[in-house]
Amino acid sequence: MARSKWLLATVGLGAVLMFGSAAAQTSPAGTVDVKAPSVTSPADQATLADQYVAKMQVSATRVRHLLDEARRAKDVVKTTCLSDKLAQIEVALKSARDRTASLKAAIARGDTDVRNHEFSVMNVLRQRAEQLDAEANQCIGEELGFPGETRSTFTIDPNIAPIDPGAGSDPGIVVVLTPPNQVSPTR
Image (cartoon, rainbow, N blue to C red; front, side):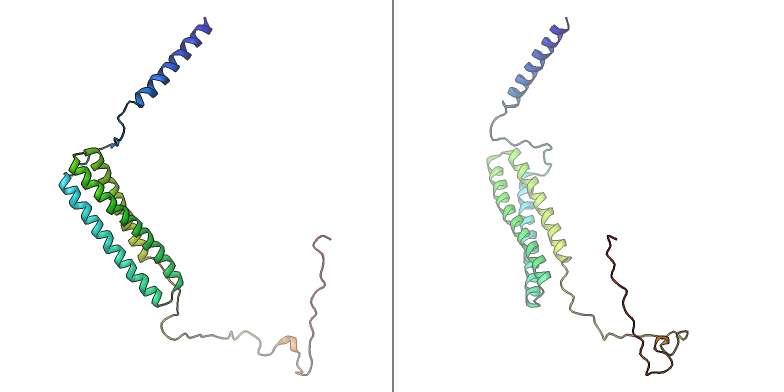
């Protein structure tokens, strides 16, 4: 009796797995699964995508200017940091340009799923470029010095003896201190 229940359960599980995987493979090729459709119209998406690319270009130009200043100042630390941020912004910018072209092509075809996907990716790229721009502002270079003249002040404690007690009262007497003998730490 128990054996037949196990056999029935195994066959049932096999059927679910077989038909479940077959059902997962029946979706048409080339479609993009988008969880939530965008409420932005296609024309607005294209306009926003162009604005995103323009803002990313402004960020790249600004970071490039900061990088040129750091190079002129021969600040290796800041140059390295800004160079890294600029490279990442330029990669995001290139990808955003490619995605904008794909977005506009999807709008022309009337492909809502691809259009929404490309617009979602554009939003992520825009956010990443904004983050990199903010990080570029935080690149810290080498400290060249402090403004103003450096001053040192000191006070002598009046409770300290005016003469070195180890020197004795006669300046001609020399006290020789010998260091302690070395002892092995394993003894």
